[in-house]
Length: 363
Image (cartoon, rainbow, N blue to C red; front, top):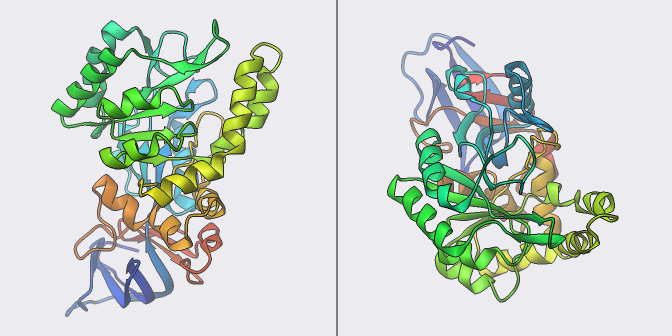
């Protein structure tokens, strides 16, 4: 479809959970709810329409062994696009993916720069590995390189202790988060364990990834500080396999990972019930394949989050949280069309009829 073609989208336009309209128009790649007066070439499609889905924890340009070539990163982004994911919060990548910003056919990315981890306390070749005295400087560096986010590794296995342990002392965290906020960036952190959470939240962190260690006594702290979580349940599903692999060397760690896995649904449901914002993220990249956003939404429903709220966690609510428009007048036409109402069955998300990005029909 050329930029001059007008696309008329009819059916059920889910502008918001309670804002459903009968039609919209796409003119020069942007959304309008007013019929254009002088359209020369009008094409029509119909169905149930959502804003482009959001994967709020994804890694484009990252593979099992670190950065990947550009052609592999392109395939990752295309896989996400085909699944209806048109907005990605890239929660840490060692690759420079700025070239994607010039591609009108690839999802939009909000970058958190490269992970920042403690020396020898994360997956090799994924992160900057530093000591606490350098944390503020590296946070400032990644705040300037990113798109308003910085990603810390809050905890990882301590080989001497044989279990998960916090990566950073409290004073280093406080100074680093303050510096990120001074530079206009929000901060998130990878956290599996219970013991890393209080210091991070009390130091002003904005979001916690995975959050498997979130216990009932910590929930009120998250609520009072407005800290969101991105549970990545499709990734947490791998914990038993990881535990089996580490059993002989780190039995305490393996047992801990199994406990975190066993209570994962209770953790997420208790967080949601208490009012903690929960968003969809797949942790694609590294070892997980891309294109899993529908599976993650289904996992949130399995955990006990109402289907409409799980849907919002990858659409209206997620876009508002990230400061990006949805199906608003004048916004870029990034939308996904489905055969049936995804509000009544989130499994519909796994079978998009059409994907429209920047006003162009791509699938």
